[in-house]
Image 1 (cartoon, rainbow, N blue to C red):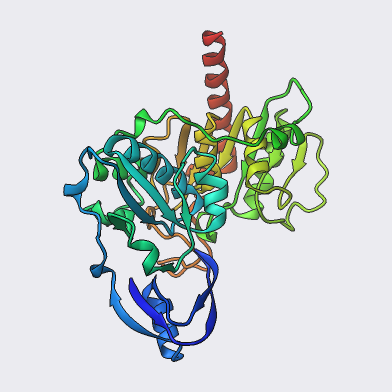
Image 2: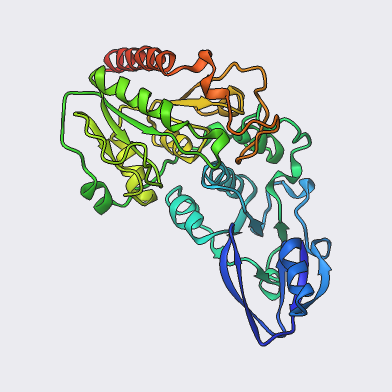
Length: 363
């Protein structure tokens, strides 16, 4: 990261991770290299240094402090990773007597960190340097203490972060708090059928479930007698206007709190390697994660998540977005017989049977 002093009267910057912010002449900000080079290239500012001039967090600082120390964390990950990071920071604050603030996107703060019980403050990013002066330590990259990042598609980020920062992530006793008025507004009618939530979206096409297979799977679930609730942030033309008894389309109709309120009422959730799977896990809902480019090890610490992976030869490739590393127009992983809609239906039946057997024993 670089420190840039603004020379224009004011400029507006927009970052896909952190959102929008107005920067002012004479002030120096910590920002990512790409944004810094853009500003300097347009002659809107000059570089004043890099993050090595900051009081960076070291592993030797991870000890129980007699006097509370202040730490600023810069977080640029997605909502799914934010759940793991919230757990980490809450436990770190308690174990090491730290007061932790975070620079992140407002939506990440509002919909993940606050409902998870994180009590630190939020800062806009880029961060003005004078605001950093009050902190004993700064951590620009939470993965900095993870020594081996070459196979992150095989490993659980919660486990990796816990090991890196010396905290036992399994001791987290919190949950995800949904505003009561939203729980009331999103309340579903009581029915005898099993409620199954499905979310076929992920960050990119490679980890999202194909539309044609999704239609086969949801039709199969409905035919088996499940009440199916289709969840997600984007409308989908493949199911637009689909009329099936027992099928309810919530695509593009909820914010994060409303999505959480619906998930909380599900008996079972089917999702991809994505935020809704992390959310359903923290809400205590049994979940089946369908994996294309990653392996089940990434959910090793998620006690409510079971995984079903494609056994295609090219997995795990670890790719996230839209470009297949082997040159295919679309990912072939979900079309492999090992993870066909029919096999997924069989897995759902087994998981639901086990789930309700467990509930009966508990009762």
